[in-house]
Image 1 (cartoon, rainbow, N blue to C red):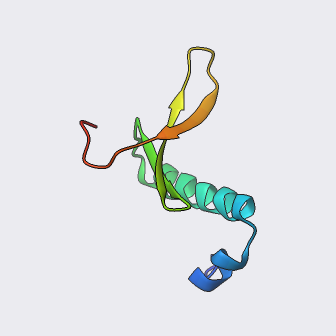
Image 2: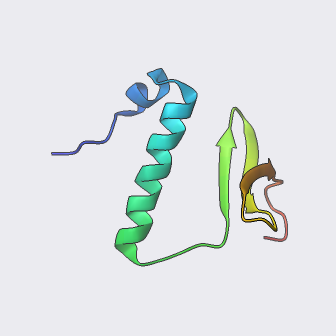
Length: 70
């Protein structure tokens, strides 16, 4: 039995709660596969954003152009 929400259920959640749920799902999938990535790109409200870590270790989102050098 799956505990994940159906697509319609995810869209009915408040945006921040849905984002946290998706982030946890991605984390579980990556952890179980033993793979890692140096970059995370998300589509938030139709805008592509990339998660970056600044010099102080704080994570933030910056605009991202698809098809770039990364």
